[in-house]
Length: 419
Ligand SMILES: Cc1cc2nc3c(=O)[nH]c(=O)nc-3n(C[C@H](O)[C@H](O)[C@H](O)COP(=O)(O)OP(=O)(O)OC[C@H]3O[C@@H](n4cnc5c(N)ncnc54)[C@H](O)[C@@H]3O)c2cc1C
Image (cartoon, rainbow, N blue to C red; front, side, top):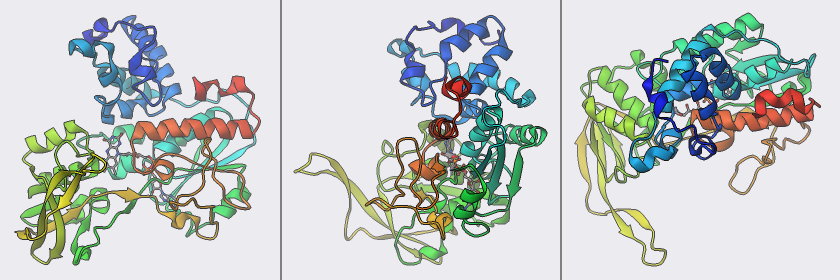
C-alpha cells in the first residue's frame, strides 16, 4: 500500500461516496480493503468491470461533486481522497489489461456501436465480454471521442486512450474509423445488418450566440481537436464558463496568447469544475464576469454589462443585460465555448419520433423510437446532452443491460454490467 490515505477510510457499510456520490456506484469500501491488503489486481478488476473507464474518470471527474464531496468525513472537513487510490489501482490494471470473453450469452450476435468515445468504449468492453461480435464506427480516425480529441493532453495523458486501442485490436473488436453514420451509412442500414445498435455519438454541434459577426469566431471543439493548426495572435478572448471554455483558454495560454474569459454570469454560476477554473487562473488566464457579447468585429468584440436581479414574482435570481453599457474590447481571436448539442443529422433517412422539445423519444432503458428500426439504443451526451464521462458510462450501463435483456441473455451473464 503506497497511499496512507487508505487508512483514513471508515469502510462505511452504506458508503455515501458510492451510493449517493457516484453515478456508477464505484464499490469504494470493497476496493479500499483490497488496496490495504495489497491485492491491487483484484481491486483493479472489480473497478474495471464496474466502470471500464475508471482509470480516466478518477482523473477527470469533478470528485468534489462526486465521491470526495460525499465522503462521511466531510463533516470534519477531511474527506478521503479515494480518487488518488482509484487512479493508482486503475492505471496499473488498464495498462496491462487483456479483454477476455466471460460468457457466451451473445455468441454470434452482431452489435454496432456508433461513436468510439466513453459510451462506445464501455459498451465494447461489456458486450465483447458477454460474447458479442462488436463493431465500433466513428467519424474520427481513432478511438476516444472527447477523451482523445477534446480534453487536452496536459489534463489527460493519451496513453490511457491508447490502451483501449491496443486492447480492442488484440481482442479482434472491429474499429471502422472515418465513417460518419447518416452520411456514409444510414442508421436503417445498420439496424438491418446488426442485432442491436447503440448510438454514443456525443454532443458536438456548437450552440450559437446569435449576434452579428459571429462567423468570425473560432469554435472551441475544432480548436481543441488540433490546436497546432491555429494561429491565435497576441490576445485571445474565450466566451463561456464550462469545462470546454477552461480547456480552450488553458490551451491558448500554452500557445503563448494573453488569454481572457468573458462570462455572462458570476463565478459561482460557471458550470466548469472549480478546480479547472482555479488552474486556469493560476496559469495566467484572466476572467471578467457579467459580460455578454453583442457583436463580433474584425478587431474585437462589443460587450454589454450584465447584473443579477431577483425576479419579484418567482424569487429567482436572473441575469439581465443592461442597455446603454456597450463597450468595445480589442482582441485577435475570439473562441466560443458556450454549449454543445447532439448532431441529429445522424438520423438522416431514419427519423426518430421527436418529443415537444425536439429531442428523440427515448424510454427509461434508453431504447429509442425509430419507426421501422426496433433495435436502437442511445447513451452518453447524445442521450443526455453535454454531461460528464462518468455519467456517459452510467447511461451506457443502462442501455447495455437493456440490449442484453432484449437479446435474451440470462441474468447471471449480466452480472458484469450490473454489479
Ligand atoms: C473539451 C471538453 C472537456 C471536457 N472535460 C471533462 C472533464 O474534465 N470531466 C468529465 O467528466 N467530462 C468532461 N467533458 C465531457 C465528457 O468528455 C463527455 O461527457 C463524454 O466524452 C461523453 O461521452 P460520449 O461517448 O457520449 O461522447 P463523445 O466523447 O463526444 O464521443 C462521441 C463520438 O461519436 C463520434 N460521432 C459523432 N457523430 C458521429 C456519426 N454521425 N457517425 C459516427 N461517429 C460519430 C464522434 O466522432 C466521437 O468520437 C468534457 C468535454 C469536452 C468537449
